[in-house]
Amino acid sequence: MGFPILSIITFTPAIGALIILFFPKEKVNLIRRFAIAVSLIPLALSAYLWFAYNQTEGGMQFVERHIWIPAINVWYHVGVDGISVPMVFLTSLLSTLGYFYSAYTIHERVKEYYFLFLLLQTGMYGVFVALDFVLFYVFWEVGLVPMYLLIGVWGGANREYAAIKFFLYTLAGSVFMLLAILGIYFTTGSFDILKAAEVHPFADNFTLASLAFWAFFVAFAIKVPSFPFHTWLPDAHTEAPTAGSVILAGILLKLGCYGLLRIVLPIFPEPFRFYAPIVAALGLISIVYGAFVCMAQWDLKRLIAYSSVAHMGYVVLGIAAAAASLNFNHPAFKESAAIALNGATMQMFNHGIITGGLFFLVGMIYERAHTRDLKVFGGLGAKLPYYYGVVMVTGLASLGLPGLAGFWGEFLVFRGAFHIIPYITAFGVLGVVATAGYILWKVVQFMFLGPFNQEKWGHLTDMEAFEKVTMWPLLLFMVGLGFYPAPLLNIINTATTALMGKL
Image (cartoon, rainbow, N blue to C red):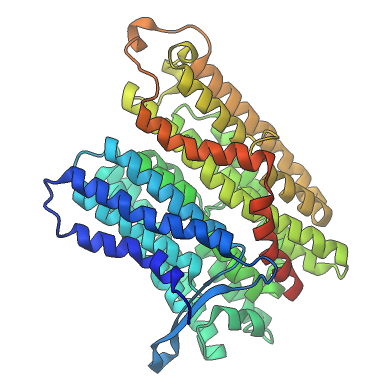
C-alpha cells in the first residue's frame, strides 16, 4: 500500500479540531493561526493530488481499502477520480480562505468556531472520497451538525429559524438515502458503491429501482438544492456568517450534485433514463425561477443565495441530459452526454469559486455599511474603486461572460444537452438573460453607479489587505480558467467519458 494521501487530507482537519480543544479559549490569535496552518496541509496535498492524478489511466486512484466493520461487510474504502479530485481541491481552497477571512471578522467564541469549521471540513472531504455507502453516509451526516451550529450561533438575527430549517430539510433527505442504502445492501450483500454501479441493484424490478432512485434523488436534490426543495437555502445563506455562506454555497451544495454523479446516474441508469424528462424539467425550473426571483431581491445576500438555485439548475440539467441520452443508441448521443456531464462538473467547480467570492464580497460591504439593502447604496464605484473592480469581475464571471470561468460550464451544458433534450434546454437560455439582468441592474447599477450619498457613506473605506488576499486566489481561477479551462476540463473528462462508456 502506498502513501495514504486521501486519509491524511480527510482527517487532518479533524485532528486539528481535537487539538484546538486543548487551547485556552483566551488565546484567540493562536487558535486562528493554528487553524489556518492546519488547513494548509490538505490544501498542499490536494494540489499535489490534482497534478499526480494519472489522466491517461483514469479511473479510481489513490485507493485505500481496509475492513472496518466485518460483521456487516463495511469497509473503509476511499479513492478519487476526475470528478472528485477538483472537488477535494475546491474544499481545501475555500476552507483555507474561510479560516483566513474569519480570523479578521469572527471575534466571539473563536475556539468553538474553528473547532466546528474543521470538523465540517473533514465531513466534506469524506463525501468526495468515500466509496462505501456507510462511510459516505457517515461523512454526509458529519457535516450536518457543525453547519447547523455555525448558522445558529454566529448567524444573523433569524439564525435559529434558518439553522433549524437547514437541519430538518437535510435530515429528512438523509432518511430517504439511508433506506435506499439498506435496500442496496440487502440486494447485493455489499455497501460498495463501485460494485453497486456494476451490478445495478433492482435491475429486474423497475418499481423497487424507481423507489430507490427517488429516495437518493430527493436526498441529493435537497442538498443541491433543486426546485422545489430549495426553500431552506435563502434563509440559511442570509443568516449564516460570511465564511459559512461561502462554504455552504461553494461546497455543501456540491455534495448533492456529486451524489447524482457518483451514485444515482451510474447505479440507477434505467430509472434515471425513464425519469430524465422530469429531472430535466426541475433543473430548467431552477434555472429560470431562481434567476427571475433574483430580480425581485433587494437583500444582496439573499440575491446571491437565489442565484445558487439557478446556477445549480445547470448542473441538474446536464446530468439529466446524460441520463436522457440512454434513450438513443448512437455514439453521437454518448458524446453529447459526456459533454453535458463535463459542463455540469465544471459548473460545480466554477460556481464554488465564483459564488464563494460573491459571498466574501457581500460580507465585506456588510462589515462596513451594516446593511445589505441595495436600495440604500449608489455611487460606490468612485468611493470604493478596488472593491468595485473585484465585484465587477466576479459578477461578470457569475453571469457567464466569455473569457471568465463561469462561461464554460454553462456553455458545455447547453452544447451537450441541446442535442439530447433540445426543447427543455432552449428555455434554459432565459436564465442566462435574467442572470445578466440582475447582476448588471441590481448589483452594479444600484450599488456602484448613480449619485453618491456623501453624508451616509462618506466613511466607507476600500478593501483592506486581508480582504484582497482572500479574493486574489479566486480571481486567479476565474480569469485563468476563463481563458484556459483545459487543466480542469481534461481531468473531468477522464471520469465523464468513462462513466458514459459503462452505461
